Image (cartoon, rainbow, N blue to C red; front, side, top):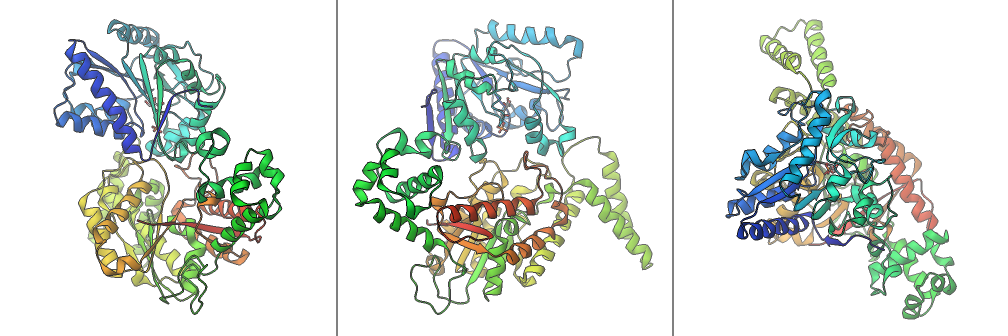
Length: 626
Ligand code: F6R
């Protein structure tokens, strides 16, 4: 089914290393032949890992002296030093750290006068040709299927030109620009035709967000509506994916349809749930004929009969359901997802931002507290980037009015208020937050998190604000995970010695806060491996409000009654600064409690459709063994 050769790696780092090795080999080969290497480069979050690899390779001796680079695109208009400019991005992520000659770097200029753009673009094309064309072109893919900024409707013959950005693309970029309104409407981009002239192309994609469009690009019909499908006609294009980005490919999603497969338990479970879904039948009603008709006769042969297999799957799914996420004290029921003893448990919930835990597993959190467990919540980052300036102004006004009301004259406070207001006044557009603004934003989120925990009954001494340093850039792009991040986490784990830990296991972009927060905890556990309590600590992973674990991967499902859904909603709403149409949530125009409810109801629907009990909502977890 795959019309483009595709390599899938377990994690993005491996994929990035694979592409970096290809670039290195090409540079070496051309160096040996006294030839320049011409690279076509991309920006965005996808190539960041690749650039880290190249920088490391340079530190170990790889020279870029004989490399010429052409970047795909730049927003228009855009000052080259602006935080969102692709010129600045390239300097910060690659060019400042390697020995490429500045005169060999070409990036579309976001400041060319409008009337000169056509000529400018013609020259850009010509320059690429003058250097003999691009040896290796690096691409990411947008959710619209764009490559470069060639949005749906772009011609396969298009050249470098000024284009209008798709709404989805502008929403995706809104995080970098603080809101969608600030995102430029146009950009200069190499055309599909320009890209297609490259001798070899590597398109990389990481994370769940990309799985759908990646499958369309690789398996779909060539279409102007998905410009990446034009790559099917290029003889040397390769897709490089991580496991999450590959998850919608037929061979991964339904391997039994594409090749004869090893019917181990995870695949069997997945296949049976899939069959129920497409036939709209509950598990216990599937017949031998149903299996046979979908080419799964060998599975039935292996299991004895549809009846046997259906029962096995039904029992498995039934046993994932529990109203006792901390285990049911006093029972000897081994089939429950959590152990009965010890009781009460020390439960530690890690939350990447203040509110992820409540939106993702608020019902479970409330149950754990109600059932008498010692529940701790650790907010890994301050979450200050998610607060808009306007909320800071509101808080400052409150402080001022408060002081006036009670005749409090505190010159220090006055001075601070003045300083912060000055910062806002000097702001001439979207840029990173300065320290005192960051602190106020962190404080806003801290107070809201406390309110939410108070509502759920979490003891104030059990709320931990870790403020991990990797997050504190004041902008969307974060620093790498550092030693201090791990130390802080190790210290907390040692202090609490939890019996169960919940953490966010979202398979998202490797540079995202979620992924870094997951890596920190896993690294901390690795370091604590030899401590006695760790062997008795179970780790459960939840997911954000957008994606859910596939039903076949769920190890624990906690049902929510209508009343519990409302309690969860109330707890989410305590995070007032987040009750806006989310800036970073793509095209989902709901606020977080709506997204959470939609997801929990949808998950409940899966169980219902499979013939299990019907609940108002369900929160689910996957056990992480390491
Ligand atoms: C960037 C570019 C775009 C991105 C695409 C994916 O130079 O041309 O096509 O590659 O929008 O963006 P990320 O990598 O941020 O998901």
